[in-house]
Image (cartoon, rainbow, N blue to C red; front, top):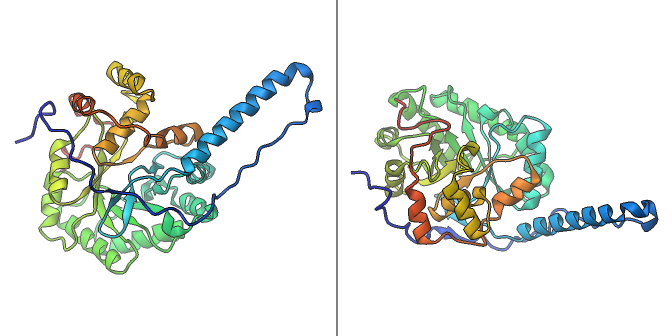
Length: 342
């Protein structure tokens, strides 16, 4: 029987969170201050120059502070996954994705989530290679193109994705959706995923947009339990049954579209909490996912938003407020609905 959001207890202590070791490498890009000669501008512009210079120094200081943040991780079957990552869904192929990923890595992100259907795997891989950060320090996820189900199709599709990424292996490979395959087709696809894991090409394998019936059927034949189920999650869409099922089977939850694609950022209840904690509505939604022990994948291509989305580890949401947020449940679906698919 589903548990009512108003009576569901506060999440258990986040015992699965671990902190990674201090990074051994130095700061990637040492950014130098640019001093402006006094005689370069007319005196009437001095105030503007001073303001802009101060703003640049403030932004730089914030970025450097974030680079020192040690992002909590959740243990998987092989290694661990940073609890906040950058999703690149709808980031345009080419320079937009490349610049967003390079910027995110400079700020301090160490988890990038892409997919074959996004058409930007090559740009993600190039940004990672150009970052100068050791490959083993960055967690990379990509996903099977939804139409390419079946053992052989999985092998072929993965090799194509890996070639585009140019990284040698991925940390997590997901079945992007249960359809259009049936149960038998999904079982064959999963067998292909298990082979990739056995070959060391995908260090972890998982699923996306799977409901309880999909997972129940998959587990009947699976030799490896999915490490992750990536679905849309937010206070407005908690998917309690799926979350409880995955918890019972040690399947980590990943939340995409945690910001509701902007549809609820103006909710007065959310705005009130943001004011209470001196944070933005987006930061409250991201922190809600963290408090629930969900890996969370906000997306942006703008430096200021990337910085904002990662600045969620200097506060916690009080238990009473978390319970109240669970009461905002309305089954808001902005993308795939795993409860409505065959």
